[in-house]
Image 1 (tube, rainbow, N blue to C red):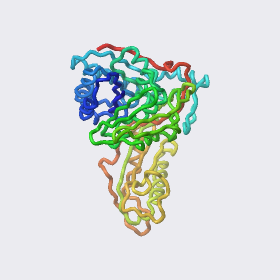
Image 2: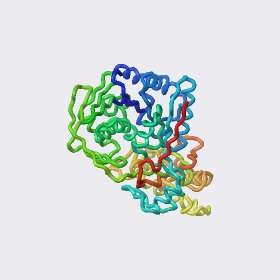
Image 3: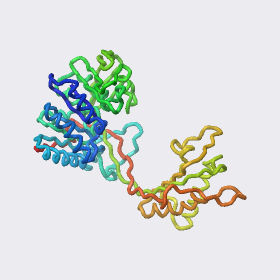
Image 4: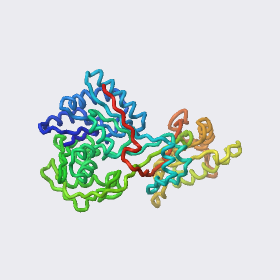
Length: 436
């Protein structure tokens, strides 16, 4: 049985009651979501052990944290460990802690690339060997095997690097010999806690897995769960509503049955599994410059008739102004978007649509913060006063803040959205154990 409140509590105790975890849920659910371990010491101290870990300690329940620090870098794992170590020491609790690292050595990944073992996922950018050097951090999404290994070695608390959400939940029942297809399907269902119930993010769930299927139980008082809510979660962050692919496997739910046992319990059976060559998804990002943002509000009725006309005019005049100052167009990037018109999508607005007002957002990216800010300052008078109508006096619009320029610092972009083939699921994984 697994209890999911955003962090994972595998249960191997037949005497544990639902009411005990209802109490735990009330105290702890609000601070943990989607297996992401947020680096806030106050919340950890007030919630992690005082509400969750003391209960887990009393009942002998191991705890699993996936994608520590949200991105799952080595720094995230180490920071989480230091916080937990301090909490354990202050609480007088002795634990064996497993630290699972999934951040990758650039040279190792470059060798994999030369060996032809890195492949692009749909929509991935084209890469070369230089791409790996351009990444400041590369992580591989852990499958279940690393967590199983830590469980087998007696870890009470497992702090995992970047992982698939489902792997964190599937590992324990897989290790216990439950039906593999059901382990993965159940894990996918509860990856966001109570989202598969009527309680949403405010709820929690029990996941029971056996040799034939699994049962999902809603535990938030007053909440319900249904065949619809359970089956629907398969399309959450998943492009295929029938199949789910994870490291080394693919499950198929085409013949799955969802049976309501009550208003708070649903039984699922019939999911099948296919074993695939083992791959890990790679995520890599790196800096691409520095960014400065400026925003102005406009309610000019003439501009509102065609906001894009004004955007195009300001863009053209701004580029010309910078070129006259000796700043070439290829030395920076910028975009100017009218939010309230088509700023979100960039698509054509509905025919005859006239907004009441828009927020013009200018974003400039350059090699240095100083250059990004200087270019933004060159544009700002245009955002404030540019007139595109003959015979009309110079307008004066409004900046949202003063000073108008907001420096965002270094910005990053995803450079890797690929898979890497491995012979052993633990080949690119490092596990360290600490006793506190």
